[in-house]
Amino acid sequence: MSLGTGIRLADLIAAICFILALRGLTGPKTARYGNLLGAGGMTLAVAITFATNGLTHFLLIVGAMAIGAVIAVPAARLVKMTAMPQMVAAFNGVGGGAAALIALATFLRAPAGSLAVYQVVEVLLGVVIGCVSFSGSCIAFAKLQELITGRPITYSGQQVWNGIIAIAILGLGVTVCVSSFNWLVAIVLVLALAFGVAFVLPVGGADVPVLISLLNSFTGLAVAASGFVLHSVVLVVAGTLVGASGTLLTQMMSRAMGRSLPNILFSAFGSVITATGGAEGDTTRSVRSASAEDIAILLAYANKVIVVPGYGLAVAQAQHTIRELADLLESRGVQVIYAIHPVAGRMPGHMNVLLAEANVPYEQLKEMDEANPEFQSADVALVVGANDVVNPAAKNNPGSPIYGMPILAVDEARNIVFMKRSMRPGFAGIDNELLFDPKTTLLFGDAKDSLTKVVAAVKAL
Amino acid sequence: MNGGDILSLITVFVLAAFVGFEVIAKVPSTLHTPLMSGTNAIHGVVLVGAMLVLGTASSTSQMVLGFVAVVLATLNVVGGFVVTDRMLEMFKVRKSPAAPAEPVSTMAPSPEGGQK
Image: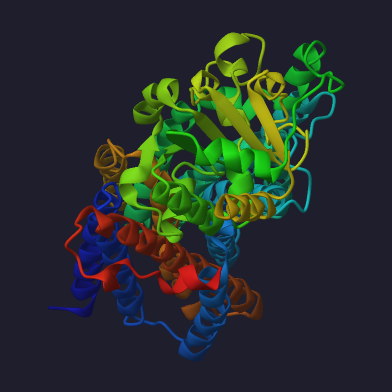
């Protein structure tokens, strides 16, 4: 067996590993095994590449890999679970950047005019998609890390400008294909970076996870394009797998939010609110707030409490405290369950990960469909740091930007307790009518401080 | 590359696209985040391409581009798998209480759990 055949066989095995890894990741029991299988396939694909005919600069390659690994491992191990979405965005962005650089390097290497049109098209696809994914992920990272505002950033003629950039990229791309003005690729690169930024700016913070999923599939396609450039089957297979499955996953995520993908990408939340916000934007209405002791009494003498955790709980790192409270209530004979909205936290499934981290028993976690019928018989719905996912405007107000999103039926519980930092609306920037409901009690403050006080008050009872 | 090669690559592309759609037809929403992170790690295979560029570089500019590409791609692949594994490790912890007879040790907090 020749070396070339060996490499191709190894690539085939790696491709099979990736497919099985994806399949494994779709089930809770097989997920971890799937991820390890993917890592195994990756190790094989990388190891066999060292055997490629004519490959030199081994020291440089190993050095570069060492630098990457030395940065990536601590970053990935130490990142807080709440910061996971932006971590994924960052790792996704660098992948897109690498794909763009590969296509660019291959293009610069070829003598001017020596590439066939289809080869130039492959290069351009790699550069453009890779750059959009890179700069888009950077902005998504900045939004989630709150380096820039999570609100949609809009300016007049935004869609027109995006259209102009897209057309310019297309026009310059065609020019590069039919002429020998190779330096135009540099302008295409810059424009693609600008397009990635412009594309992400108007997307509201709450929608950014869906966007990251979309950018993830973009990077997959960029990798596939660079696979075409380098004639590498394993790059084409893995890139396309991610591109296709990522697109489907993006659709599933937006469906979980009850919205369509174009709606998420192009209807900046902010502009809609100014149109409908007039009647409900008034914050001078009275709300009822209470002390931690009042809340403790309400909870301790209830029969059934449903906890609705949201991103605020995660930010405050209060998942352990909420579990302590739940244990305490259970020891007093109160039934406690957790109602998990599909997009609680900032990504689908994010809240499950956070609560699992705090060892909340699995059988207490209820998915939305399971939890909603329970609210009618609940004495208290304890909403900790969640807002949009319990906002009845999604059911009642067709003018609301979140209208149609499935929500938790918190309004059916006998009492509602909101633990909130302030009267500020949620991540989507929409006021919540439920805060003004007569059966609602508010406890202002950091979720962890509030919960700690309530725990102390329950113990004192 | 001749016409036959590009056609066989396109064949691979189309088939892989179908497999990508089919293989994740049903995913519970709890696994959306790990799946996104896992697919993110898999496109880190771009590292192979970056290695080929750096390993066959003949000029300084090629070497710089290749070197940066290898660093970025390694970040993608290593970070991607480690982050995904960390998330899924927690799912395993969550699953074990389903069997009450399990020894207590399996319910102990994961190493990350203690750091928070």
